[in-house]
Amino acid sequence: MKPLFIVICLLLFGFFTINVSAGGSDVMLDSVDIQLDDRAAIKRGAKLFVNYCLNCHSANFMRYSRIAQDLDMSSDEVRNQLITTGAKVGESMNVAIAEEDAKRWFGTAVPDLSVIARARGVDWLYTYLRSFYRDDSRPWGVNNSVFKDVGMPHVLWELQGLQVPIMESYTDEQGNTSERIRGFKLIEKGMLNTSEYDAAMRDLVTFLAYLGEPSKLQRLALGKWVLLFLTGFLILVILLKKEYWRDIH
Image (cartoon, rainbow, N blue to C red):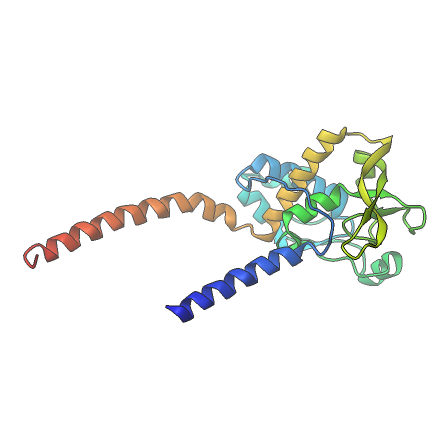
């Protein structure tokens, strides 16, 4: 039993360290409650993704036809609501931007977002999308408190507006004093107010989480029936065991 206990502890420790390191930032992340069975939220997030993200970021592991199947959308609905280029319903979610152009414009290759939610975590994404602030020293005029000196412009600024950081002084354990971001102040309003923008980012993160593991929708739907079957099977096994051992006991 001792080796088994050690193995379990190592697995739990590895899982914990993976989740802690996934954020890649010392900033306290905001928690977001997403529901992968909320198809309406996934649809809203998909529309935000194709309108604001798919111009530069691809999702090569996902096909439009898979979205149509999972979200009960017809081919016409997918063409009208999600396809903004000449792509076909059966094609992957690619972008027209060339990798060489992306490196020249942004300083690095633009990452594919198919599994970004699994790599970073939904809390990281939710906080990141709400943490852009004005920084005139940066090429795009913005920075991000979660991903310092990020090369990505704030493509959602027209929805959120522009904000500036509120700084505070703090002293670490070694006695060193420095400044950190305590919050943000809106200096230019966007199309959405704060609560509406937060809700929109929750929808977008929900879609990104769906992108990373689309089969989870089927597992969630099938899971209750599997549990029901196992419960019934357990009852039959117990009754069968009692029947076999009745004469012995």
